[in-house]
Amino acid sequence: MKNIVVLTGAGMSAESGIKTFRDAGGLWEGFEIEEVATPGAFEKNPKLVFDFYNQRRKQLFDVKPNKAHHYLKDLENYYNVTIITQNVDDLHERAKSSKIIHLHGELRKVRSTKDETFVLDWETDLHLGDVDTKGNQLRPHIVWFGEPVPMLDKAIKIVKEADILVIIGTSMKVYPAASLINFIKLETPIYFIDPKPTVSKNNYKNLTLIKNGAVNGTKDLLKKLVY
Image 1 (cartoon, rainbow, N blue to C red):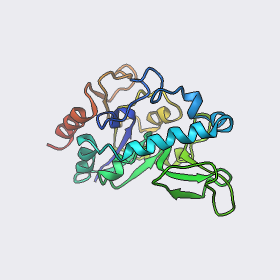
Image 2: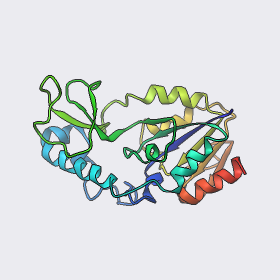
Image 3: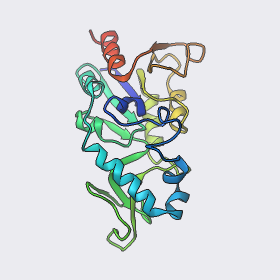
Image 4: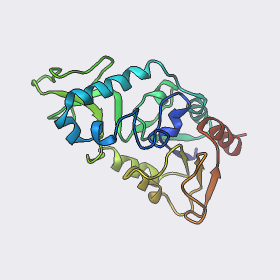
């Protein structure tokens, strides 16, 4: 069974009602990235950061996986599928995909500020005073801008073994996630699904562009790879 690696970004979840950076003019739900998604922001105003992620976590209970998420699950009937996502939602999990790597963390988890291996599932609001077993403050389990990406090496290893690479709903401008495309074997076919793709055949020899949103684009992908 061939290995398909799928890289997903904000456009994957947009059709479920979760806003993207690009569509919000560089803002995330009305906030500058520097206000809520950097270590400096957390140090300067932890309450604002907690409030921001508490709202994002609550939002997850008001949305559900869209058809694109389910199409990727269907793809597992024909391929060995691994999803590497930049998204911090749990929509791939709720669509029952089997292999998911979160590069940028997960909204429904928190971790210790002193021990990044201390991670808890978390369904409710997180506040100042919520601590780990040693009394250290907990924080969102999110990889903020300027922080290392712990899952990157594992993702690189998986991409290197891809027989087919699929990219859905990402600008390919956020690094180091955007660099993953450079680790595929030279002959690996690439399918890029986005209404406004940011790569071209001038960049990659075996590129197929599917200029569509995640749902219709992923449906088109299945027609090409399965039906």
